[in-house]
Image (cartoon, rainbow, N blue to C red; front, side, top):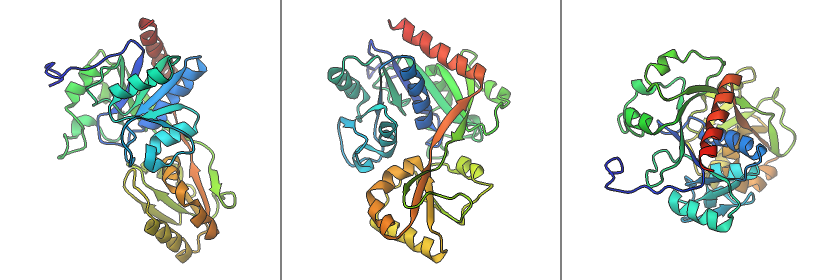
Length: 316
């Protein structure tokens, strides 16, 4: 209906950049969002991030504060806020942008985390992400596969394609290029994990036994990163899993059964663990997370930044 203009999309004079997936989750939209916003802020732009706030128990427009709970704003927006970004959530991205600009008219750019299929908004620059190990031309549309929409239709709206989770840059993207329109530049990115950050208990020791708990769509990159020091036990939950008290006690029990005093999780999962910190403390457990970022080849990084700056300049 949007393609045939039966339903109308809303656009804005301010530069609006959208990141999104071809498939359902697991491509690393949030780390890529953080990467782009970090760079734009360093360039002197006043950047705001707008997200749906997937998994939150609230509705409507909200400013995300660093001391919020994930159940109120969503785990990914909370993570971005704790990294220092101006972050907002709203189911309607159009309403969200309107309210952001009313609150702060000094905002220069708005970046949307996961809004490629939100057709009520017509952004100015679209970045489409796909993963290296799950080619879209070998997949099918939900529910028969993981694709959110027809890939050819998606390419028509995309200004750039990023192939994520390229564990060892450079990667040969020739096969991917053969399935893309010629107009779309294609870049490769990889995940880079930072130093483990302890949030509860004694400093985390990677060379000691630990329990790995994840609630993300695809933990494969994390497992590759940890392969030299693999966990003694691994518990995997669904993406954005809302941990309940019974889950926390089960995790603590399993760590006691294996005589493990350390729990490692992802930065996104920590956002949902935080409300239970006192229970982990009473159990004398150490709880830590691994921060995640992205990296591009120098030429790809230059192309990414040049195209985004060119778009921004066209809006001036």
